[in-house]
Length: 364
Image (cartoon, rainbow, N blue to C red; front, side):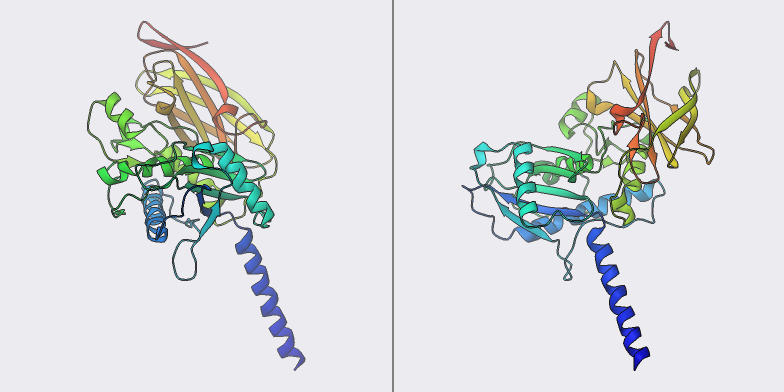
């Protein structure tokens, strides 16, 4: 009897530990936020299920494109397979809200409901401002050390079906701004703006310009959207896609030795060195902030794996014929991104300035 009871207790303890780990792991929580003067949309569940299914299909395909296959989809679903949706009512009328106040009010409500306990999460906040053509105009996403990732965007109920196989720039998906919704979610995962590379021949990037601006600048009618190699590395390294909790406390102290910048006639610009930190660096990222960019959303970004000894070499294969700045930063094994060990993301990158004159690039 004692053995049976002991075994039963062990099973219960194991079940409790697994339940705790599941509750603590980083996931995407979908929140439908409805201002005070708007009635909640009828039958919102199918549309949200389709939005999340599209996002899952997109990430699965695009991460596989770059060899990232042993990942989990971080979107929360109930036992019946439907996406878990938390409906929250706002205190103000729709016209009073902008993205940051929406995020602040949502976080306050979640704290009062004790929904913020445990590890950091990602909060995908869909704002319903009423039946179309009414819409919430503010799209914004980011990361907070206390709350985790967040994104605020419009929830569109225009009749129609979201086809998971349709290009993200196809007519209906463009009408409901689905790229913008997933783009802002990308900021919640810590991604900066990343422009497309011509060598990939796959269309626009998720973290790149809008469909309209892409077509205007490129001069072609393109509806495809993909993840670049650099975007894929950033997503795949995030704890949410690895089924882990986001317990990234602080930033590792970073030292880079033998930092070198060269211009190779046939390859492009090259950045290499050796990174040393308390955590293992997985990838080195280099963003080309060229003066000739059509805008911030067109920042071409490159990636390479970091060797076991910390050595890295990143080739900027499509430099613009202008001056500019290369920003170098790293993705560490915890998923954190930093170049200086003091701040996060691309803005923390080590800067190397270059000029272009007489058909040659030179580093200052």
